[in-house]
Image 1 (cartoon, rainbow, N blue to C red):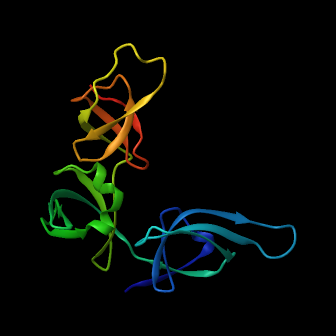
Image 2 (cartoon, rainbow, N blue to C red):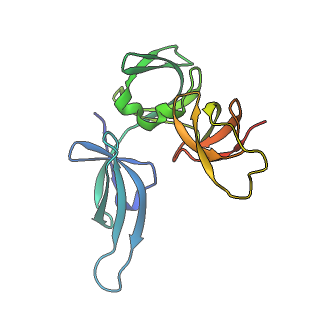
Length: 190
């Protein structure tokens, strides 16, 4: 395992730190210079494996262990039992990633779609999707034409099996844009 030391002054969002042999990704950070006393850095860290988010404060200039994380664009091929199989387009190497690591991304992933797979010492850490994806609605109750005024929503099932809320006028078979971070409806795709 390669250990690289960085200072808390070098923190960036998305940087992965190795704290107590656990990998944490920096969600946000803020340098604080109080009127009295030493400066410090307030961070929000997300456990790469469990997804748990914690707040941690470091003294400014503290040395932290950064983990070397390799991010590669890979193509999602198919599901194999509990694993998702991805392929590196350059080397054609296949990588099996457990459902636990894929997490919520599975709800918005289609076969042959390109995603970002992050690994550390060849162990998959997480799968990152584009900010939005286009998916077809495979089932939703018939829409009410002209019912745009209420701003109401109804459940719709996507081709990946995920269920999201869509406006009432959206019909089955419509392709829509979905925000992969929170599963929200972003609009129709023609």
